[in-house]
Length: 219
Image (cartoon, rainbow, N blue to C red; front, side):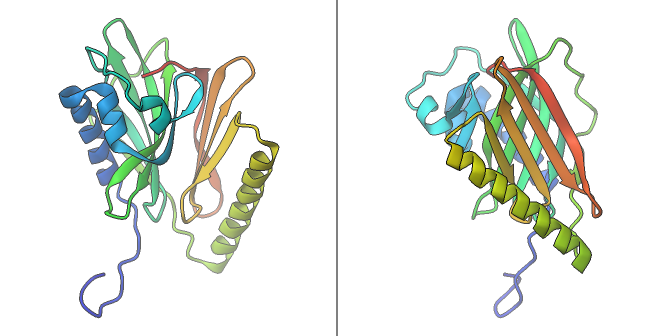
C-alpha cells in the first residue's frame, strides 16, 4: 500500500528489477556454485531442461556444483504490463562451450523475482553482449476493446492448457502472466529439439518477440 489508509499501488512492469535479478543470479553462481544458485533462486514449481524437461527442485536436490560454474549475461528482457512475469534472453559461457538461454521470471510476494523456467540453447554463433540490455513492456490494454481481446486470448490459452493437462502429455507447456499480456510456449519436439515462443501484447495484438527452435544444451 502507498500509506496507511491509502489506495494500493497498481502492479507495474519493472524490467530493471528483472535485470538486477539476472545479475544477482550469475553473481551467486560464481560465489556459491552453479547448482546452489539455481536452487536458491528457483520459484515454486520451476522447470528446466537438462535437456529433457524436469522439475527443478527434484533434479537439483543434492546435485554437486561443477568445479567451474557457467557465467551468463542478459541481452534483452520482455515484461508483462503488471510485472508479474518477465522473460530474459542472453548468452552463457563456460570453458570449451557457449550458447544462449531463455529464462522466465516470476515476481514473488516480497516483490523479488525468481526464475520459473530455464532453457539453455546451443548456438553456433552467440551474439556479443550489447552495451545496454534492451527492455520492453507489454501495453496495459486499458480500453474496453483491449480488455475484451485480452480476456478472449486468455480464455483460449486456459482451454489449451486444460487440454494439454487432460492428455497427460508434457511435450508442450503454456504459460502466461497474471494480466495475460505476456505468454510463452515451451515444447520438446519428437527429434529432441526445444522450441520456445514468447508473445507480447502491443495494445492491438500479440507480437511474437521470441521464436526459438534449436537443439537444447544444459547450462
